[in-house]
Image (tube, rainbow, N blue to C red):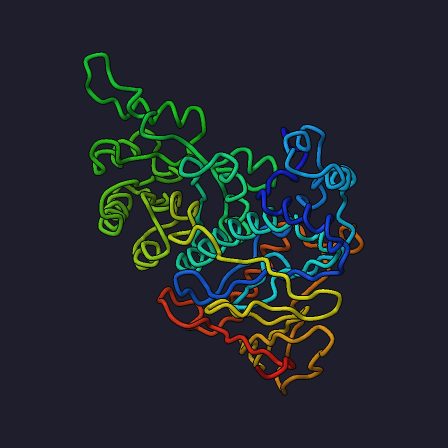
Length: 438
């Protein structure tokens, strides 16, 4: 596997110029706390999903500057370049576990250390969390819309080749069952799925130019077995279904529809399959599906979905809108007060309250040195967990399957309106407790 050995230049130039200036004026060693949060949820969604934490931790471990990188940074002083030659993150990172739900102003990630070592991590941290969380948040809504029916991630051709791999990981965390991307399957152990495209059917055109769909189907079945899924809409769907069952028999695994009005076509195809005795043959649909299209097909005889463009691009929200802000310097809270970008200073903790039924009520954010104790008569759960201590990754962090399971359980705690696809207020309000009145 060809992995990038260093993540240090996955950064913006101003991180390095700030570092250089801080070394020159002596502020580089001040103890700081940086926080990742989102001021709002994209597209007025009801909740967000934290994803990318596992990749972020790996990126911090690989944040080492090479001589090739430093040789191109001739705008830096020699003192700064020497600092970067020996750079290792030695601070602490805490945050919401991967697969956790988040809401506006949730303290998703907290980074502690000197200004110098924390400042230059900003870009790589945000690039991972913003991308992966956007995809996981969109994919989670699609999983809810599918109502238990499996979804295959197939967005590789709709995004950057590396983003395709990490996007498949984020979608899998959200509950997608498989991916078409082989690198994602190799790297993360995600089940791979895929059969054939329209090109396969077109390849089997007769020498005189007439279609030979049966030949394409037979060759696919000879190669993959009768459990395969045949793409039946290259020409006429009705004839395609008839050809598929004729060649495979009534035990054909599935047919896929990739065009037309998927609701109408799935009903017609189901009726035709039943008439042909293929009662167990599944119907898989694709073709520019998003969470709204999937929800619209819920009452139709669809057994599974293939989603590409919408999941790979966050279904209209390609970034989660998270920011990385300095909130504390040498133990003193600091905060921006710009119009529309106000924030709370100081390191924070967070907990979520629940009714006896297990339904979440609100998110309580508090100063880390002022734990509210038992804040209400409701049950509650602490949300912030240690990820890195003194530069070392904390042992026992969740693997991908545990993360996926955690998210599935957290979705169940949302009030019913939180699972709605409509635009509205966050499903759970964020309350600040213990902060000074402004």
